[in-house]
Length: 426
Image 1 (cartoon, rainbow, N blue to C red):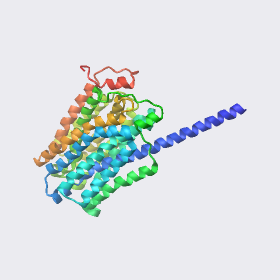
Image 2: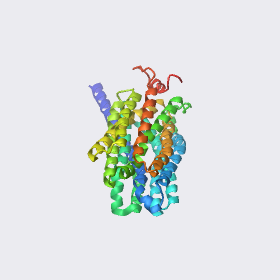
Image 3: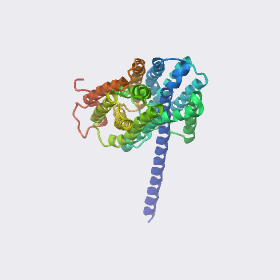
Image 4: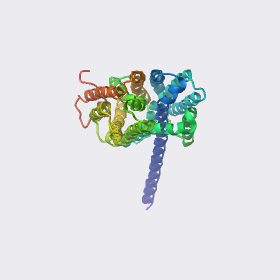
């Protein structure tokens, strides 16, 4: 009887610990996902204010695009170093600083609206943006359930996509209520508020010091591997495929398709909102398949056809909304698989650095795309905002197919799966 009671008490104790761990994981996922929402919301604030900024600052779209290029250059140059800092001194500290800095950048631009301040704010926003992927993924990789990692990544990515999806509507509403200056200040204030909320919640950390204190050894390994280089190029093409639509889709639809400001924003919201829904679907797919390259190729092949249709045909408003939503959904499906590929390719204890490295691909695309699509708009070629996106989607499909050329074995280890990213000729 004593043994039965002891076993029962032990089982109850284990159940309590399991429930506490689950609650902590859910709280951590919610907190980190909220921070990711802020990052994408802040990314879209400036592009959504392009019509306001163009008039207030007296500049062209290429000058506004240059600000986004400055943002991308800064983020690209600092992404890998920030990943190193996240692994060394703690991802939590880095994340809180990024939220605060991004908010400060927008608030100061709202208070001192000028082109030099726009460029300065772009620099600060770029530095803040470099924080999120290394810090977020380092914390999630350390504290989420392994069996549900793909879905955890999908929820995190969904929150980011949702931040971008609601940005057009929020910015439009704020402009109507408080004007452009007030919109910048209000949007910036979100960052410090969320940072304070994360402090109250008490998110866990992820750093080399934590792993050493827990008795885990972190061997020194080469982080810049061929697999991560291929993934960096893949991320760059993904960025180029979507950046034109995300940053210049509204002005292209207004000037080239006769859409109103509200309907153009609704179309972009449909694209971004469907992307967020696609991410959730992709999370389940990422946990049940290893053919991530083939998933990406299929989704982007269909996307290329849809966006080509948008580029060449003046679709009625309902069909345009449906086409934009379909393209967004398919683009979102691949995001969790993309993140799982990076995690599998990362050496132990180097998730922050790995995500920092491959995320520079996004920033390289961000450096090129604002100038390219800004030039396209200044040449009065709005249809080519979508046409150029089609070209980059086709290139993305080709690279995704290259990554799947190697044989796939169902018993392959994560390391073997990451090696399958490398073409057979390497």
